[in-house]
Structure formats: C-alpha cells, structure tokens
Length: 299
Image 1 (cartoon, rainbow, N blue to C red):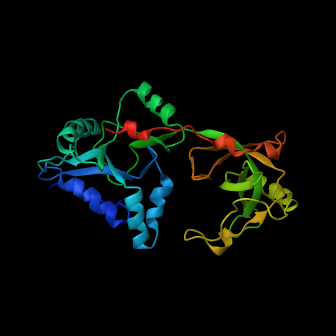
Image 2: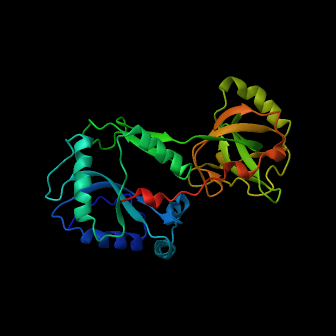
C-alpha cells in the first residue's frame, strides 16, 4: 500500500479512516505524496468546516467528518510507486511523474484528488477569475528547483485582492502602548445591524498619536449592533481582547483577499479614509462573491 504523510489531517477519526481506506486502494509498493486537506461544502472549499475539526469533543469531530467529508488533494510526488526518491528532481519532472501516476493509482478512490497545474499564465489567470474570492489564491512555484521541505523561497501565493468601504465600529490599543493598534471593521446587514467582520492594523506609526486622539473623542457604546468582536481567545491575551466601541461615523476603504463565514479571513490593508462616504452605504453587498464550482478544477 502507499505511504502518505497525513500529519496535517484533521483530528477526525472518520476523516482519517475514510482517506486511509482510499490509500489502501492505491496499489503501490511505496509512495509518498505532498498534499493538502480540504473540506468541500456545496462544491467549494470551506475554511470554516476545516476549522471546526479543531473542536475538542471527538464525538463532534466525528459527526462533522460524516456530514462534510474531507479530501486529500495531491500536488507533489516525493517517492514514486516503486519507492524511488524524487526529491532531488526539479518540480517539472516530479509533476510530470505525478500526472502519469495519478490515473493509475488514484482510480477507484473517492477521497484522493489531483490538483490542477499549468505552466501557462493565461490559464492561471483564468483560474483566478473563475474562483473569485472563494480561494485564498493560487500557488506559483519554480519548476527548476528540487523539493524544499520547510522552505518557501521557491514559491509564492498569488491572491485575488478586492476592496470594501467599511465602518470603523471600534478600535484596539497597541499592546503596552497608549496608541491605536488596530481598527475594527463593520458592515451593515439588510436589517440595519452593524456587524463586526475583521480588522486592519496597517496604520502608519507617525499617524497613530493624532488618530488615537480622534478615536478617543468618538468612544461610545455599543459600537457594533450585530455581531461584535469576541474577547480573548487561545491566540490572544486579556489585553489584546479588549476593544473600545465607537460612534459609527468613520469610513475606511480596505483591501482584502478572502472573505468567508461573514469574516475577513486575514487582516486587511488600510487603503484610504472615506469622509465622502456615508456609513449607511457600507453594506454587506460589497463582499458578496460569486459561486464557484471548485470541484471542477480537480481531476
């Protein structure tokens, strides 16, 4: 049977059992793939569904694994079906061998898919246009390099960037400093509620003292009238979880790359202030994205 590094697989025993069941169907003496675990939901990949696998209750993880099964998407070949090491070969050769191997060894499996790959810029741009903001982006790799474990110098993520005008519903101080550290962003839903969606911290250091004074003069609850920022999490301290609510009068334009689950998935970049824009014009319609059938990209 094939040997696969599954260290990045979710905690779900159901996921592991199902994917390992497919691995047992791969008739290879010794095989090592590099790949990514994804959770398809409605023909696209759900970051939220993947995060839910971190749930501490094993019964909950198993339930999710049954409701939204995970897939292993293979994108590199490190050891061929006969156990020959390929890591010293350039990516162009490793991928060619993977493309030849996949139809033979992946046939009959449901949980193992081959990632799309191209050397044509036009086709890569077409992928970005098709998927919109439903994916972080696509990965560009140097084809002349051997396999690099833990080294990202030969690759780059190409992202789809979009912008949105958001209401500043609150702010957080810099940890340990009496100046603003990040602005908390919100958009109005169709019921007129201001929902917290994320933050931006790309504020110039020289502008922070004056901006802090301006923000402090606008402090007033509740800040957000819908979903509000949470408190401390496993990644934050008590101090970093604190935030100050503001009157909803300030609007900023921010650049973002991925929006899902009613949240900006990464920190956004502050582009400009919009004193010409009414806060009530800042609605969720800006971040609605087209549906994309990502499963069509997989082989």
